[in-house]
Image 1 (spheres, rainbow, N blue to C red):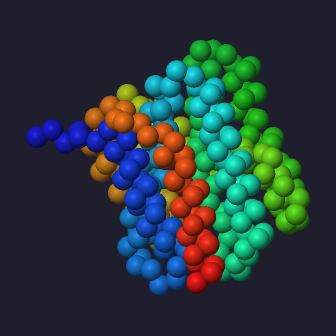
Image 2: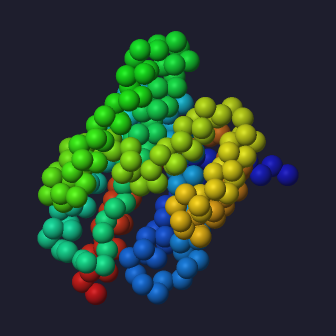
Length: 245
């Protein structure tokens, strides 16, 4: 029986459904804990899709730029929303676009190093770390920190998931021709994730292995802008509802 029945679009649809439930749990106290357990699979699925998109895209630079712009716009929207509608119980720290942006940069670094472009690859590798330094220095100054986040999405130490998820995404790309090895890496990361994040539910990110195993290598319908729009908009809507009610 052929189990490889999911296209990249199908994977992303599964991810946004699970992500919605996870954010419902984040915003509304008393929501079923199963929502966040299933939601642990979201990051691995999306990172896997980023690795596939980066391989197949006709312009890797354009993809990196698009993710960077998405990160900036989401940061601007979230900070603006928290300013006009404050909620002491909820902080919109969600920054997956920044994580995908940083991950894509290091995928590009990998390509450059494979092409023996040592200097360019090395400079690109340290760029996100250099850009993160102002935010680290001004972490305790909320006004300055927020404005740095608006201007610089490439905050490696501040992205949702941190270096841990960035490393997973890059390894998905490095091993993209070896599906079994990708799954082994995912399971290994899941096994140690609880210790890294201090979250007993984080190891359930291993659930992402099932849909990834079922990936058939096809793009599907794409629906690129649906996924770019759904992520920030649904978070903002849930935040508004949770704050008002």
